[in-house]
Image (cartoon, rainbow, N blue to C red; front, side, top):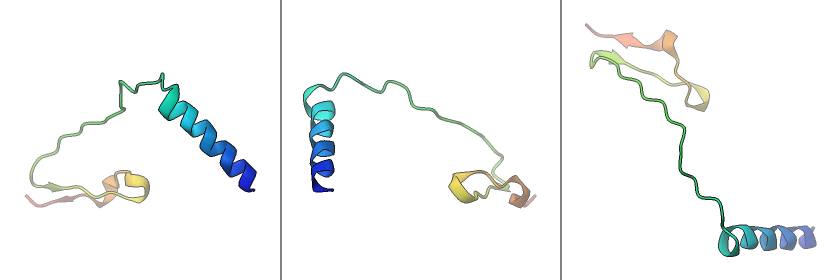
Length: 57
């Protein structure tokens, strides 16, 4: 078990510190706009729970 851990640490060091050739240039995003009188709620995994939204107008 310890040998496996040491190999993972070594691989991570190679990928991140020495041979870092990957640079993230894009992040997936989602922009949603709602009216100020709409209260949004989120469920498990930060997913929108549309059925629980409240409209206070």
